[in-house]
Image (cartoon, rainbow, N blue to C red; front, side):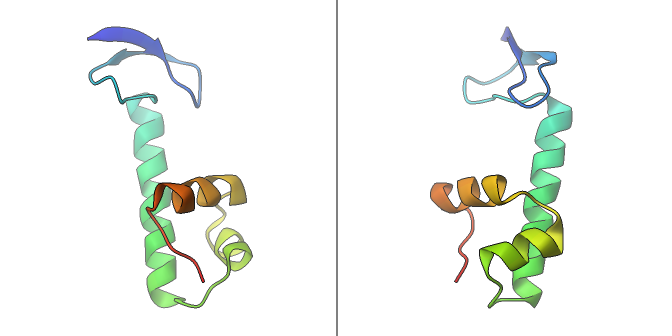
Length: 75
């Protein structure tokens, strides 16, 4: 375990795994936004990227990164 700065808020946190880049608070917020996005896509399966962003309040940048990671698919 080592100390690291969160890439989102800059707060110092104890890094448990090498893959962790965010503190627990930011990680929880990130996952909450992801589940909000998935729920929106379940009810609006034909939503465009812009519609998804407006409908959820999640930035296009974050949505695009999830698309690149293969976490979500948008038509």
